[in-house]
Amino acid sequence: MDERIDFTRMQQAGPPEDLWPAIAGELDRRRKHRFVRRVSALAAVVTVVVLVALLIDAPAPPAGEQQIASPATENASAEMTLADLRAASARLESRLSDQRQRAVGGMELESLLWLEAEVAWLDEQLADAPSDRELWRQRVVLLEELNRRYADGDWRREMLLASV
Image (cartoon, rainbow, N blue to C red; front, side, top):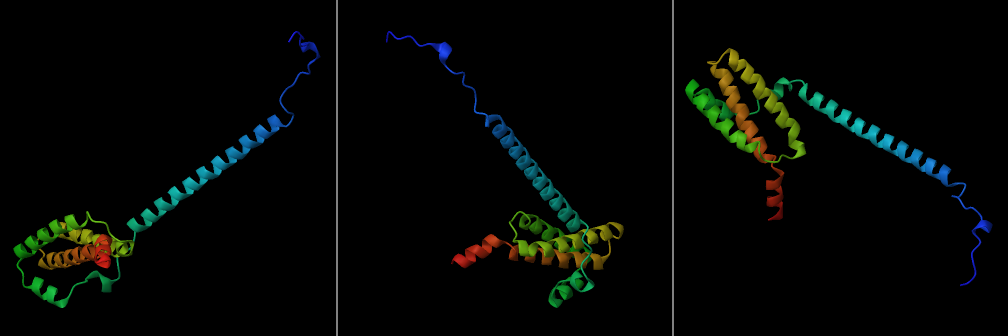
């Protein structure tokens, strides 16, 4: 231990020559990767916005699909008074608000959106003619169909039935 170290003879060591180019290359690679992720996220957002816009601006269903009800339901609602039709509509609307809280399978979603749009169109018509019995009858028929479709589209109920 008596030997002294001569620091003047030591070589000065620095970083390896390829260290800084390797760091610069890694930073460039990360920058490009970050750019690709951001562009992908932007493309996904644009796709979702376009799909939502298409669903909102979807045209009305063909005339054959506008009234979906059995003849028995149509005959029963044709005999009802205006007050009865309004009460039935309110009752069905109340049941429908409970049905809308449930999960719905993807296969039913399009038909539900069509029916919801049809009810909204009828509501606009009823705002102009609140005592039109035919419009109220159509609204009751559509609300019955919506309630039935929401009940049928509950995928959790189907899973429970399948597990039994």
